[in-house]
Length: 163
Image 1 (cartoon, rainbow, N blue to C red):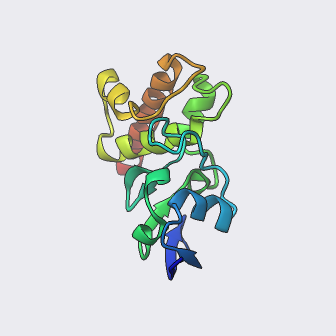
Image 2: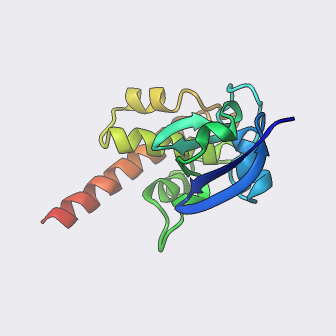
C-alpha cells in the first residue's frame, strides 16, 4: 500500500506521520496521536460522533482521508481546553446537554462551528446546525439549551470586552 509523509496541525501542534493513503483522519487523530476525544461511531457519516473542525469547518473525520488534511488545521474536542471551560462545555454541563457523553464531542464541535459563523442563532438554526449529529439519550432539548447558553455567554464576553 502506498504511503505519504504528512503533517497536520492538530490543536495548534504539528503532528507528523508516514501514513497509508487510505488512513482516515479519525484514525490519524485517535490511533497515531492518542486524541481519543474524537469518537468513532458509525463509520458512515450518519452519527457525527467523529466531528472535528478542519480549517474551521465542521467535518466528519470518518469520511476524510488523513492525506486530505495534510498541511491543514484540525481542532478536536481536546483543542477546546483552556484556562477555563469553553462556554459550550460549560453550557453542556449547566443545561444537562449530555447523558452518556458519546455524542458530546461531535455535538460540541458542530456547535462551535455554528457559533463561530452565527453568534446568535435561533432555536431552529441550532437544530439545523446540529442536525448531522445523533444523540440517543437526551432528546436534543437540553443540547439546544446548552448551545443557547454558550451563545449568550459568548455575546456577554464580547460586549464586556468591547466596552
